[in-house]
Amino acid sequence: RADPRHASDRAGRPYRETPAYQHIVAAFRAHRVTSEKLCRARQELHFQAATYLCLLRSVRQHAALHREYHGRGERSPEEVAGLVGFRLPQQPGGKG
Image 1: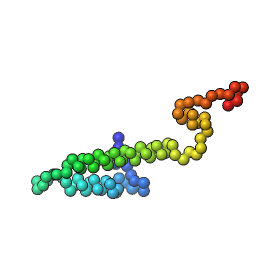
Image 2: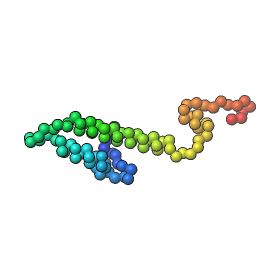
Image 3: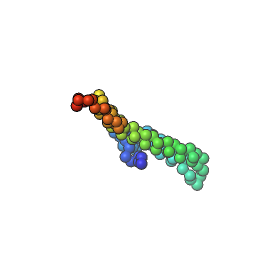
Image 4: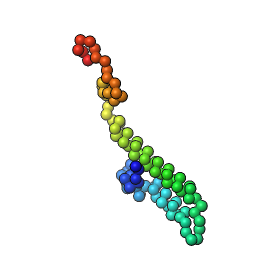
């Protein structure tokens, strides 16, 4: 579950200081229903909020994948085969 309170940008700033979050909050405040006006863009605001949530989830998934698979250097053939669930064949005579 992507919760904006657990998100931060690459600079390590809290989510409330990110431009995307501030834009969404400003848009919701500008279009909230009051006794003086009607909210004309409610569906659009919900779409923007859903898009921002999708962005947060995608950034978190990307970071997790990056941590798991990036920067380990070259792997041995045995290790690569193990990653995808295979075993390399054994050579006769006990070699390999």
